[in-house]
Amino acid sequence: MSGISNDDVIRCPISLRNPFAVERLPLLSRVHSAAFRIRRRLSKRFVGKPAKKLFRLMLSLGMGGKGVFRLTLKDSAPRVAFNARNTQFGALYLPQSRPIYEPETSALLDALVPDSSVFFDVGANWGWYSLLIASRPSFTGKVHAFEPFPATFHDLESVVRQSGLDNVIACHDIALAERDGESSMAFSDGVQSGLARLGEAGDTKVAMARMDSLGLAAPDVIKIDAEDHELEVLQGATAIIDSARPFIVFENWLHRDNPALTLDPIALLAARNYRFFYPGWVGHSADCIQMAANVSADGKGVLALVPFLAAQRFQLPSQLNVVAVPEERFGELKGRLV
Image (cartoon, rainbow, N blue to C red):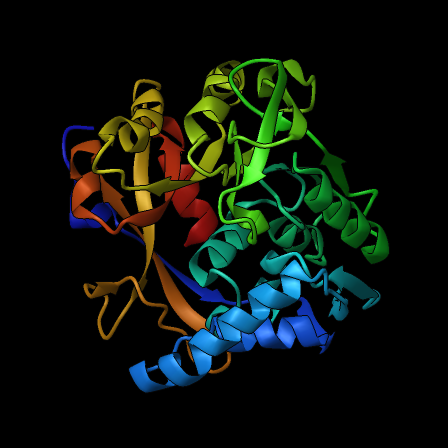
């Protein structure tokens, strides 16, 4: 790509679709919500910090409980029990997850994944994005959800089974990586399952496999959240990337002490003729793009995909969900979103 112009910014009117509705929260989840609510200084000191201490104490004592949410499907709304000890279920109830968890990524994937396509959810945790796509009334495709950590995989399988979507979502208890084999995992903070990292010191053994070795139908869209192992996932998927040319949405963090950790996944895809975008929101005018969600009370807004070059990555926010688009599919991307 020789340059970037304002015409390359994609603006997509969206209406957020949230099929999840919490019916019951156990005490642990209510304390979790109080502990991690965004607060002002005094409230943080006298409410937030004590709540965090109480929350961690409850976890250390083995307290848990089951919450319940309903999932709206085309012809039903099954009640689904969830494990309160998996803090990633906070996507359902934490105040900062309103009106929906990660609104820019949820809106993007809901618009980007076609009804009859194959979607790979790499680092699925309990399955927010898998269920979001599979619950779409018009969806007739297939979702493959990959979650290697055993306890979290159990949550994923349970939620999918209770939802009655096990014919749509295939759950895989493997870590996608650059090689086939075995590794270990641990929670980096001992609490949040969403921070489980491959290769961390720990006694939890997990199976690893290259995406290229699975023999599954090629994906049209891949979402990757692998806690700094995005490069290894991509290295194990180069044959699929080169042949199927999927759209890829992957988490990317700035590592100023190790820039290669940030830039290498981008470089691998750039060498394969991919372009890069980050999601934002149209603000008070079409040319005002902001990171904070700008969504009306009824869930309407205008999502923006803003192009960037690899050399600009360290000028952007610390955490991004990068949207990687094959050069030859840029027109198709615009057609799906606009």
